Image 1 (cartoon, each protein chain N blue to C red):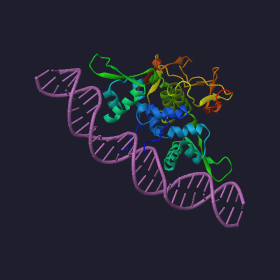
Image 2: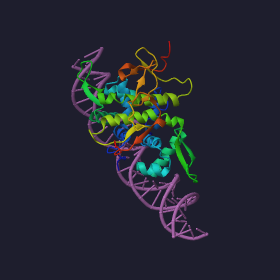
Image 3: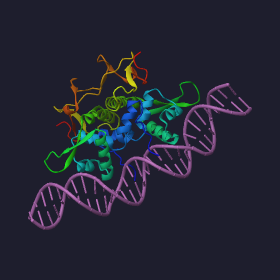
Image 4: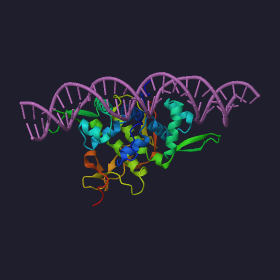
Length: 150
Length: 150
DNA sequence: CATTTAAGTCCTATAATAAGACCAGTTGCG
DNA sequence: CGCAACTGGTCTTATTATAGGACTTAAATG
C-alpha cells in the first residue's frame, strides 16, 4: 500500500507536502538555492544514495521545480536548476531555516546564516494582511473550500 | 540502516527537516493550527494509522512542538496543543500553503484559503532585510558557519 | 591514450508507513 | 445503574520507501 496521498486535497498545505514532502526533496531544493547544480555535487553534499537522488531529481523535474539545463561550464553534461516554480519555494526554505535557528541550536552553537548581499542578517519572515499589517497565527483562520465569497 | 540524520547539521534547514520532516509531522502541525486537539480528530481528519499517529504525536511532544493538556471539555481525556515552539512553525505552514495555492491547483479549482479575522485574504509571506526592504531569493546568500563577524 | 571522474542504473537489505485486530478506560443514554 | 458506543491507544504483519553499493557508459583530464 502506497503512502497516503494528498494530491487531491482541498488543503494547499497537504498538496504541497504530497508533492515535495517526502524525504530528501526539500534538502535538494535547499541545495539548489545554495547554488548546487551537478548530480555529483548534490550527491556528495547530501550523502544520499545515487539511486534515491536520481529518483528525486526526476520527480522534481517532472513537478516543474527543477529543470535540466546544459552545464554552465560548456561541458557535455547537464545541470539541475530551479525553475520559477522551484524558486517560489524560497519562503518555505526560509521558514524552516528560521524555525531551526530559533529552536534547534544551543546558545552559541554555530550554524549557517542567511544574509543579504551586504552580508547583513535578514529579518524574520512576515505575513502581512491585505493592508500590510503584520499577522500572527492567531490573527488568521482557514476558510474551507466552498465557503467562497457570499 | 536508519534514514540519514541531520540532527548535527550546521544548516538549520537540515536540522528542521531532521526534526519535523518525516511523513505526517507537518500535516499534524497543520491540523493543530486548524484547531484540532483530540487524538481521534487528528486520526479521522488525516486518515492515518493510529499506531503511526501515536508515534508522531509522541515525537512532537518530545520535541516541544505539541504538549499534552487536560481536555478542554472537562472530561478525563487529554488533548494535544501547540506550544510556542510549535506555533513558531506558522511561517513554514503558510509557506507551504502559499506555494501549493500558487502552483498545485488548476485555475478555478477550489481550495481552502487563509483569511484574517475579518475574512479578508492575507498577503504573501515576505522576507524583510534588516531595514525592512523586501528580499527575494536572489538578494540573499547563505553564509557558512564559522564565517562569523570578522 | 589510459586513467579518473561524472552521471547515472539496478539490485538487495533494512527502515518507515499502512492496515487492522485488540484492549482498557470513559462517556452517554435508557 | 448497566450496557453500548466512543476514545485513546498498543501491537502485529504486510507493503512501500530509503540505504548501500556494485556496475556501466560517457566524458574529462593529464
